[in-house]
Length: 281
Image 1 (cartoon, rainbow, N blue to C red):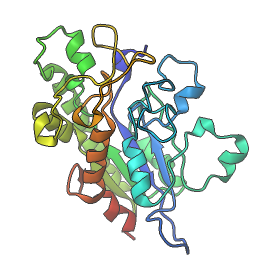
Image 2 (cartoon, rainbow, N blue to C red):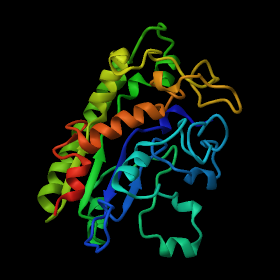
Image 3 (cartoon, rainbow, N blue to C red):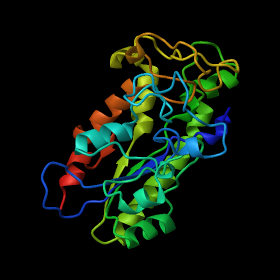
Image 4 (tube, rainbow, N blue to C red):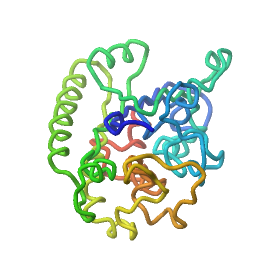
């Protein structure tokens, strides 16, 4: 099973928007970089134990256990639907011929990986035409069941605040980088997704957002509550009432609520939502 320290809820989305003559899609392509929160199956093709290509993963996804680390859709799947695009394929799932022909975006995210929006990386992406970026800050790692359970805290402990304080310091550095890049890269637009605040609030007030199961884990896990889902075990019946699918990852319902807020609401994505970003000239 993957180590706890390898899961870092930080990812970046590129809306590669160009002028097209066709109707419908708000953006012609969506490119995704990140970790297991947005992996659409790349880890299926790697020599790693961090995989989600078995049941009960994907129990609510149309294609079944395709490699997404949740019960259904990721945030990127919801973004693709809202933009009028097909689900973004995992890069490693494509043949060489498909890689050269795909036009609606590619997902490079990989479970247990991380993507740091360093200046050099952004400059390289900018140099090949990227102009619209969405950078999601790191979520409250100290609230993950795997972290709380490994610390042997009381059952009702929502978060390990010492861990969250480190995340806050890291997120402050991300913001500094975004501000610098905004000034340096002409005609670029950066949107930040503050999932730290939204996720933290959800963990402290689950019932407010409809998660009546609280911080219980939906699927059956091992390691005293510190692993991913055990294979072929029956998960909870009503996944919409749970925040956590396994000890590291949220349920589809959490992803849905986050995606809706980010795409058309005023939070967690600022200063623009994804819809406004896609339509920005």
